[in-house]
Image (cartoon, rainbow, N blue to C red; front, side):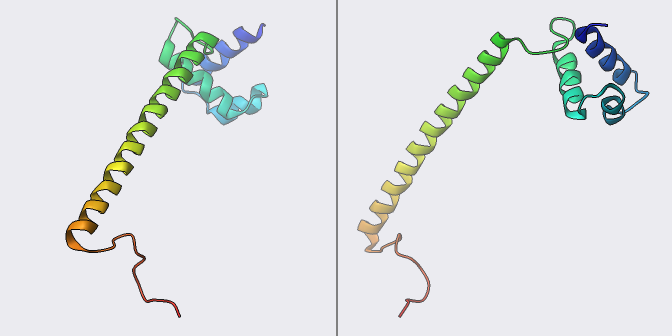
Length: 107
């Protein structure tokens, strides 16, 4: 039995509902997390890509994730700049120092 066939057999056995991922892991010598990933890939991609992500799919997902994170970082930096500007305006208008540490002064 090839590795691919073995993976498919493990996935099918799990999907039948007769056993747990941990028991299958012990039976076949794989970690339950590995089996969980195989099952999730099977559910997500069905017959198109039943056992693993291709490098292209991983790279596209990674690129998307990096781009999303970069955009979130950019927006966060803009938000910080706007909040700092609001504090500066407030300090000027009301004669306060919001950035000053609150609480009792240390001696």
